Length: 424
Length: 176
Picture 1 (cartoon, rainbow over the protein chains, first blue to last red):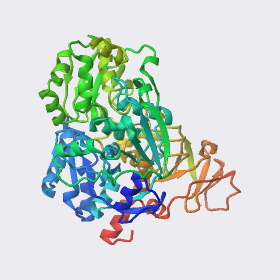
Picture 2 (picture 1 turned 90 degrees about the vertical axis):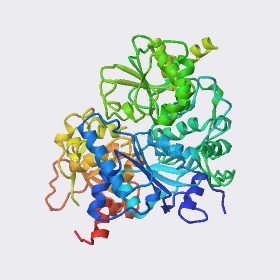
Picture 3 (picture 1 turned 60 degrees about the horizontal axis):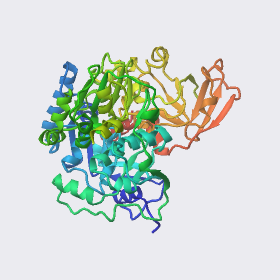
Picture 4 (picture 1 turned 135 degrees about the horizontal axis):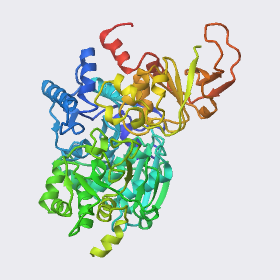
């Protein structure tokens, strides 16, 4: 058998083959289908009712309510009422209501494991790739196809291997790596292929940070963002209650497999920022002209996991947010929030002047209007397309949680390394 | 071959521009009114059934929300022709009955021109705005452009109205 990439191995397994060739179109069996209150029941139920069809395997469905919660208006209340009623009437076994953002809740609840083939009704579904699973986002109609059949087609993708050697400086994160790569290659630079992250800098990362890499693979236009599982993966999954055997040898790219390898030196990377109105409009924070901000936002699956909150706390400890700035923190999940509370991280943020918001998609999805009135926002989220976060008049800059916190302290977009240096 | 009026739009048209988040709670007819309003305020009201968009690269980047396809279907758009698409948008397009045609030379198609799309043979032919599409013989096209070959099962899906129509046929055994 010719050498295979991790992507090929995952697709071969899901399609019942020993191996697959690049660019083959194959039908795969789906191990898990996740959808949320925006893409899920409100779109699926009418179509299922019309077809008189039923769910192929309820044990493989996960429903997460995260987009329209907490309900702020009658439209949201109607959407959530429909979602909850449907979940009850279908007797779905895996339903997570208002406990966090789907891409973070799924692994925390032990649903994602190496070797799985998964789809999600959300574009940041590649987050699951951090665990060595083939997971990608699809629209609601395609989800309907999965829900009634348990299958989906996929074209075996080429793999771009992002090889990060060296180690990141203090105050530089997975988010900065992603902004750097999106800036280099553009928002469709991966051309719907597989991106795989490897090298000593990735090996050294926590699962939270790896999830940020896989998550923002969406901003590279990749179908999936894969990371081969290792002991760090196993430790996370055991903590999440996974008791299955986990194969860390099988789910990796063969040394001789055909990949497009791109090499990076992690130690040379500076904190990065994406200026309006695209995630690929990037530069080093230090190269940005002086930019005042009125709102600093730490939120979303991309930028408000426990490690993201910890990063912000390192910068904010014993300091106060500038009076010209509102610092908003929406932890990615209740578990992240509780962990941050228990260890004191959340209190550091509150003492610095942060306002804490619900553990939902919040301002990132633009479904509410939390940022109204701000000219400039620095945000730990993934996207800054015009109007994305509610108002077309708002200029959204993307940075790491360190950079967002540092900017909240000074009132202008700031390289966090200077503040971290003072602290030590 | 039926002809479709061309509306040119730029590169990197994202899903938030096509289906703005602020309107996502509403029905597709409501969202469609706001389609591309941040970039082309008059476009949604100008589109007529059968028209096509000719775009720059990376059409449909961003979210998985298929309303970003649905708004164009709602407005009667038959196809989007662009040098490249977001892969997720490309899948959603065929699932909802919109042709996403990958044409490297899309930039050569002028605003207001008319195009004929031969998806099965991966070709686009371009005629001037004033050529009558009344069933009479067409003059030779101004341009003929090659496109990327689309798998047959996807073309069939789009031309039959999308995946839901195909499933309706399968489940309800209707032939409509």
